[in-house]
Image (cartoon, rainbow, N blue to C red; front, side, top):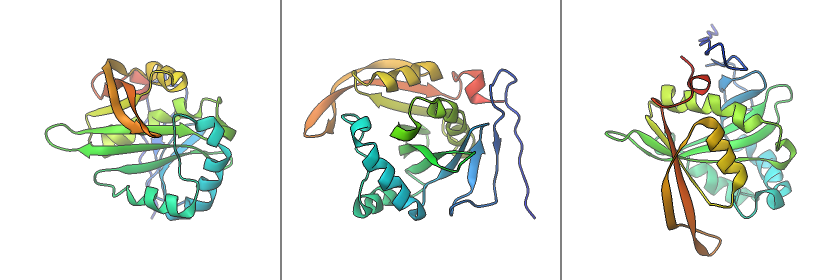
Length: 208
């Protein structure tokens, strides 16, 4: 028997979010939904669509994101997500089922920290339509409720204004600046460090 776990969010939230534990779609069940977006885990069945979107979004992503564009790169990408130290997630448009973007929770550390590091991107065809900002309400619920994490961190290069604007809108706190933090495209890149915890999250994103 299919069962549903409905979790009504704060009435200030634009879209009601709820979990859907069953009824698989493209090999993976929806974890949470908003009015327009569904969150689910990435699977091998997503390879063709994901890599095609990544190729079409190459100019849109540069110089901030290197998404897998070949089958071999996708296999290596998928292998990272062991559902223990890393989770690979997709945000899909509910009306069409199309993949709007991706969110990764990596470097998951348990007791006593209970934290993870975020990576995310919206594919070019879905950019600028608010899917990522809306969909992050589902990411927060999955990370803080299902995974039991306390803290999510995002390291962002100073020139990545779209990403910086997103985390500010979502209620992340700026915790500092780290020169040469990550080696990207042949050089050590500076990053701003942003983070959010379950205790300081905006009510509309956190839910009850």
